[in-house]
Amino acid sequence: MSATPASGEIPVNRWTQMIIGVVCMVLIANMQYGWTLFVNPMAKANNWDVAGIQVAFSIFIALETWLTPLEGWLADTLGPHRGPKLVVAFGGLFVALGWIINSVAGSLEMLYLGAAVSGVGGGAVYATCVGNAVKWFPDRRGLAVGITAAGYGAGAVLTVIPIRMMIEAVGYASTFLWFGLIQGLVVFAVAWMLKAPLPGEVPAATTVKVLQSRNSSTPREMLMSPVFWLLYVMFVLVSASGLMATAQIALIAKSYNVADSVILFGASTLTVALIVDGIANGVARPFFGWVSDQIGREYTMAIAFGLGGIAYWLLSSLGENPWGFVICAALIFFTWGEIFSLFPSTCTDTFGSKYATTNASFLYTAKGLSAFLVPLANVLKTYTGSWHMVFVVAAIMNFVVVALALFVLRPLRMSAKAAEPLVGHPAAE
Image 1 (spheres, one colour):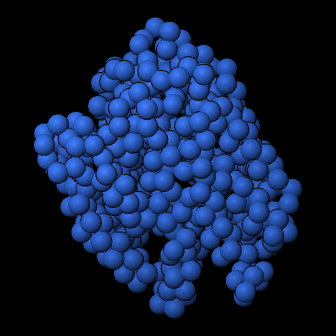
Image 2 (image 1 turned 90 degrees about the vertical axis):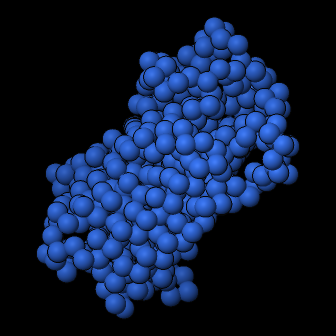
Image 3 (image 1 turned 180 degrees about the vertical axis):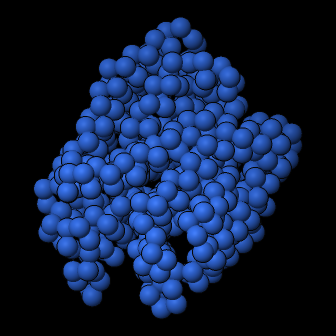
């Protein structure tokens, strides 16, 4: 149980708040990570071009991210009692409505509308739950955000097989309808249990291992900082490579002629890969978040993204073998998912917790920008005739971020430490 708040109210167990956030994240996970299962069925049923369908994925990611500063601002300014619950409840309704629209879409334009509505709802849920995590756990920020984000990264594992079976049995439209209704309404119901911490409900800053700012920067102050824009560029580069894999994994498996190869208990390579990828994606977030709490954010970024660059090269070389495909794809997701714990933690460490939901949401918009690079992977694959060059470009992007983390971000943050009063243990950084 957390410390007793200064107001004298009954204290709130912060782990309960985290669990609620994780549940909400799980319920919106397949809006992104289950999307790949709907692409080919929609293309065949409607004679739509795959690249045109993937524009809907880009729209979803853009709206899921670009509106989060507004949604985060609402969660921050409506107060600890009203803000989180109202924003997440709103998000749940839009989550349901978006997939209902997808279920009746008779044109790409209608599909794009459904993607936009889904994105607004998903972003409201995501931004608020992450913002709550960084506020409730200043002493274990990387781990807490990682666990919360893991609900989004790994949550789709629970629905990969049911969604695929339901699409085969009754079609993609009914699958959109029923999953949309169930997911959205459950999010709406549990949202009313959320709240942000009051003074005295979180540990004192002296218990924190890594360096954190004593001051809280307003969003405007943050946007004027070179550290923020460096983080933004780094986020775009890594996010774009990971989203390419997320959106195209089924197409890549088909291109390598391994998608339908049965490899485990009657399950195909693609089904096994999607499950393992979801687990790897989810495990990465708390794992690397915890590591970053111990050794510092930049060193953890270098390790994770360096391994990520190697993973893309391995998939290019070994992807034609069914188990090689599963293992290499899993390594990609394991070294990509942690961006959703490392970057929010670094942002809040640097700019403080008072405006944490809003500030982290501004950084999260980088994911929306990176989504529009995803269709370029299809263009490059068509131009070159294979996925090899796509993987090479993705690997280079990861290695560039490793260099930026070690040789640009770390010196800038150390310089900020010298200029401003920080708390924590310098050796941790």
